[in-house]
Image 1: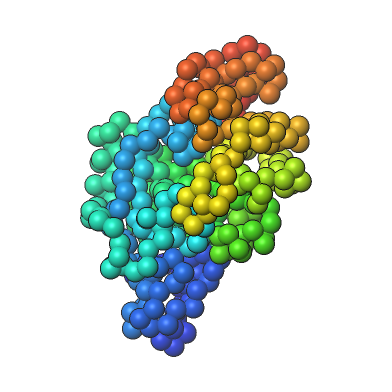
Image 2 (image 1 turned 120 degrees about the horizontal axis):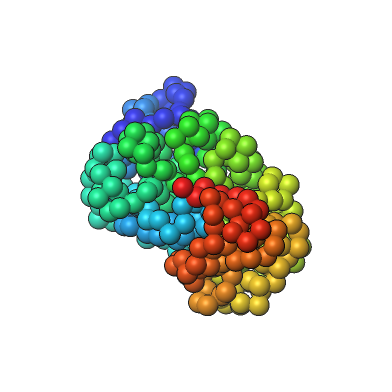
Length: 335
């Protein structure tokens, strides 16, 4: 166990400041994430160094399309999450009842994680699969070691961390993909057990601090796929920065949401067209076979600057981060 960051004592109770839930935790109890426990008035992380998933991924799988394309990233995860999404695809990791029910794990030090990434030919480490904020102490220590050895750090996040946690993360974080699951607070409460406003605030915050930001929205039929909602999310992205890439992904029935059909290709294409019409310069369609919406096109001349099929790059027409046809700068981190 590792003493947690971002908490205050109130007698024997602790108030966790890691995320927007601000859990008040009594002795012997845990916060919403299930992996931070009050032991005799001290809050501990139960998952420091306890890795339940690790593998090498293409960075495009995060998804990040404008950050070191075609590179490898070393993905790690513990268990636990501060959301309760009914459609979670990684529920076997995120939705654990207790430390005792945690799936098999291996113990890793930050140095071992970074060394494994280097040996695997990775240019970055991704903290992913569950909400990485819940294993913040370990992720942060890994970030420090990675920075020393010139590896990049990536969070794949629901964006619900507190401002205090976000501020501590900024100096060691290179890129973040944040889910905007809906533009409805009611959706967040009913489907995810959380709220919307902190997510939007963190999109703004990380972008303003110079961290590379991409956004993902999973379209669920009948819940968040209306023309109005799609346009509202697009307008928000344009307001923050029209060069933030937006990944619109297909839903597939899973976990506790088996009553909805998969998202149709036509709905995804309609959403992509709406995003582009609203002024988002880079909109992608994902999580669907042969969707045809993975390539990057120059917003100036329309030339294909990075061709993709799934997570595989098929052509690269970038020259020093610019379109090889017209010379327009393409937003991103390319080297």
